[in-house]
Image 1 (cartoon, helix red, strand yellow):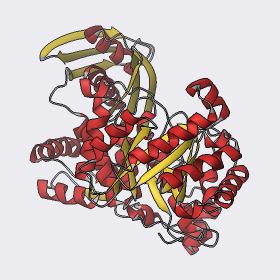
Image 2: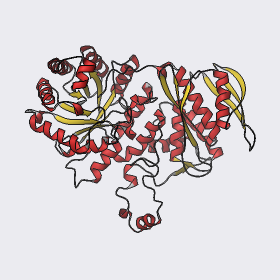
Image 3: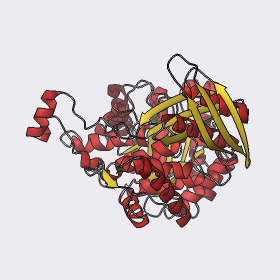
Image 4: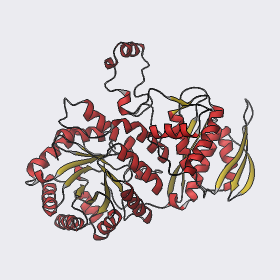
Length: 516
């Protein structure tokens, strides 16, 4: 590989899914994988095959659907993990096994209860076994950011000799700072005798808010693969954000001696797809993909941009996929117009039935809104994907009474397994009353952990997008709903979460077997 090429390794489907409530179905993972493929992501880490039957099937499905990107499966340095990953990836056009074992003193002593020499031996055996399934093997010394440098050098030299072609250095707990982490990469590449036979990679967590900075410091010190996620999703505070890594390297070519091969115009569509599927809204001031990323409020800034865009904008909005022509359809638009615009946005519907469902929702929305924006279509398709033929609960009708000086009251009709049930409840507000009325019907015994509202577009007729997070018996799910009526959107989000809690595919557990 040329030294001026930076490989992008996306782990949204694996590490991103470890965000509380971000579980995805097999079909949703395939949809995201195809969006990543359209973006020309080099490596897609599809999951952790040994973690559960659901994870195995998802990795298998992604491996079968993706042709242009390499599909990767994660495995501990154990024979059963590696064998399972090899089985899940056997039909991939291009595959990689990513195996790992902890190397920091605290992890080896407290978690593994192994001596360093035994860890080194297990790492070597794991790489050798992985090579039986593919010649593309990546090795990670988990918690490398807190590991002893001398031992890291021993392990890395040994696994490269065993056949690892990529060495990933993870800052597993987000402990490092850029100068320290960049220096570590430089030291490892200098001190490991056979370092020139492998590509050095980094996987940084954002616990101290420095995942992107640490990754970029590593790139400046010779790392040529970055592991990252869409919107910075991931366990705890998340991972390095793909969009920030890619655009930082491309924008600052005066500092970076490399660039990616990504189609950056696919960043916004992919960001919205991931946000819609996982139920994790993108904060407005998020770099690159936030709604305010290219907005200017200050009069001085507005004047400068009008005279010359470069005065206050270092990137073009269109380069990352923001559309200048946002008004796309209206109530008189037909099915083919909807299909065409969805294709332009990179949205693929799996069947004619899904298109019909989306078109019916589009017509319903067009009766409420005169202008339909791209953002509305993204939410509409996300809502279509949230629907399921096996929904236990459906909101049939909702009536809310709220006036100054009076206690709000909600009347709901909810279908439970095909049978309609009525309920009336009061609350501190219309949403609270609606939720209490729904709960009186379903008796879910769940805990509401999060309630979040975002407007999809501007204007008083904008759709509101609501995300709720429910927990029950250790499981956490996110539910989403969108409507021009925020109370209806809130009720739909709650119902959506209840369906996920009760649905086998969504409620499957993901044992936390380890992380890099």
